[in-house]
Amino acid sequence: MWNPFPMMFHPTLIVEDLEQSSAWFSRVFGRPEVRWENKWDLTLLNPTYPINYSYFYVLGDVSLDVLCPSLLVLPGGKKAVYPEGEGLSDIAWYTDRIEEVSRQLETHGFRTRDQEGNIIHDGVVPESNLVADCPMIWSLPEDTGLTYEFYDMARRHWDKYSEHADPRLSPNWRPDRVVEDDPLGIVRTAYHTILTKDRARAKKLFADVLDGKVVDEFHDPEMDADCVEIAYAKSVLRFATPRTEPIMDVLTGEPTHTDQYLGITFDVLDVKAAAAHLEHEGVSIVHRQDQSIVTDPTTSKGVVWGFRTA
Image (cartoon, rainbow, N blue to C red; front, side, top):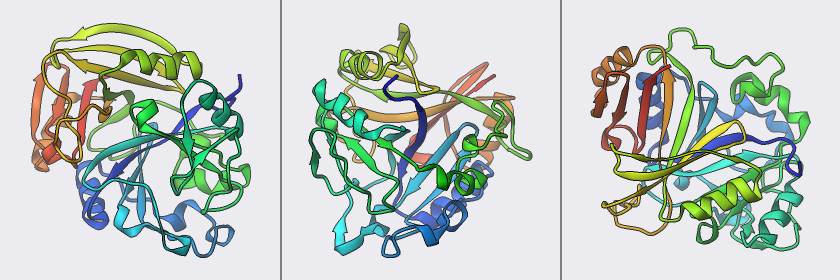
């Protein structure tokens, strides 16, 4: 396989106040933030690179990157390419051969860019502003619907990074284990929901180009949407096309034709206990069935969090 290490690196959640978000994740998910000094040996990084413009939260088998764009100013005063508002903005994937990934995507009509927005050609991926041996690229939403990042982390960083930021990088990682004192009882991720007007594009990108697999196609009556589920890189992506309602931008609330990363659904030990905890912490439930619940994004950091009994 041309991309021999496929696994999700992280989803990115854009927020306006990083410390307020830290308090929210502590209350609602029972998770402390993972700061940069907890995940990196800072002496190995570019000394002019900003840190703690984002915190990580390990939620089952997902490492969530919660990022405040106003705190991210790249070396030389360069501005990073991130939107404003609160909501999920993109998904990042690990890879071991980032140049091949960039070339493969370009060959099939999916362009990539660097941190500063410059288009990459012929797999010539520049060093990152973070540290030379961790190059990263992003797809263009005009081509892929949503922004997708690919990230090549040199092995010398793994030991430190796996301690707190991504335990899946450790040889001792075991899936499907609930963290002690987890108020939600998260077992694993079930799927990530992305609203799209173009499911064929999603299938081309993830099944044809990136070697994923279409596992199901169906109509979701709760969303009144036609869906395709694709297994890729140890994750399941659910691309949903609403039949009647317009797709709304998760950050601005305006109608859009661009794909929108709506939310993340988890398998939990007891969905009723999870619902009781969420409501106690001020998170509203908008859809409730015997074995599943869905939160109101206006009360949950702009994200539709789903929970279902494992």
